[in-house]
Image (tube, rainbow, N blue to C red; front, side):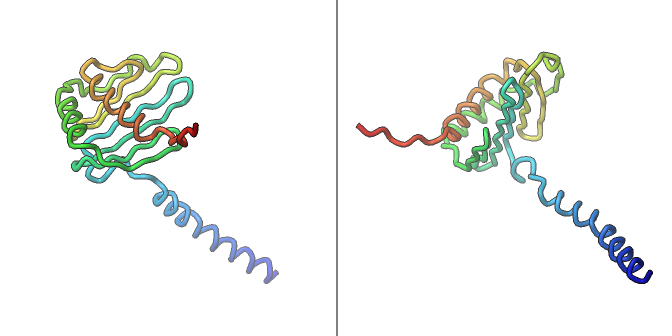
Length: 152
């Protein structure tokens, strides 16, 4: 009887400690949404292939990007960064919309800039297009897998 009581007591103590340990581990494992000093954030998810692309850029032009299991941290050139800020400064559509979300395999776009945040599905507002095109191009260049040089 004493053995069963001791085992039950140990089991109860371990079980009581597990939720706190698990919660702490889950909290630590959660990635932060962008940089703490994020100025620009962009995400494109969905589609038939289940695309997940994201980039976060801080006030100094330092970018962190991820797509298809590839991640990179890099510095935008002053020209890239200036052009991107001008394009984002021209965005006036900061309201979110679920229009297009009912389309099968749609893309969801999230754009953040200077405290604004909006989510759109399927198609982009016209004023988003120049900035989003540039952000996609930056990610394409910086996240492209490196290929070995061809030998003749």
